[in-house]
Image (cartoon, rainbow, N blue to C red; front, side, top):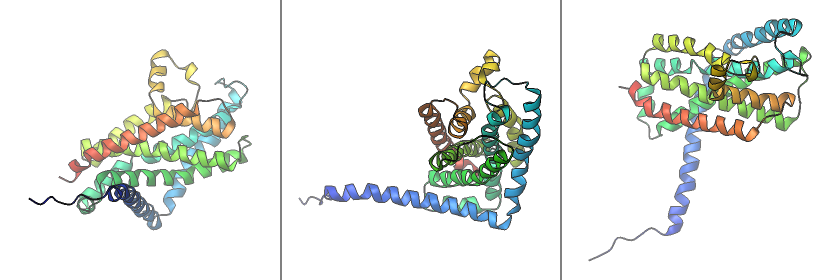
Length: 272
């Protein structure tokens, strides 16, 4: 009786790195496909940047004058700027599921799902494309904040870390949107849910005011809100406020990973 030959251990050792490289290549491909859509409507980057600029210029300068929110020795405009960066990431990403429903209706999603690429690669590519889109808004907010006199760091490594935080935050919220899309399956329902949860997520974070000013029940919600940790990391990196970077980055990485898994598991419902 003949025995089938067993592949040498080196073959197994080489297959894992190759599989990882192949997966990363597919994620990058899906991300680039998403970003190329901006070529057809470049005004999107400009129009989406208007809202965070208005928050910074109008809301920030007004509340800086009336001094209604105590922020210690930090000027309120300095305190607000990182929160507005996180807000722009939230507002861009939370409606990302609408696009995937449109792709389902146009038949594009079905074609993507029959490719050998895993669903997690598709979701991850879209999630990080949302993060890259948000980086452009973060740059605009940083420039406007600097023009308004906000004291921020210009350390290249810290600015690079800021972009990483923004990408992780946008990745989570875009996956949250795609997860909701997999549950509701319709654009109008997703739009309603997105509008219903956007402002609660924003106000139940430390983007506008310290967590210590919130009532107890809202503090509990804030501590489980990934946006809170995104803002804390941005404040630490940009204006030097003390924070636990291990906790902030850990929560964002775990949230983004969980969001990718949830969205990928529900992606098949959209194609039925």
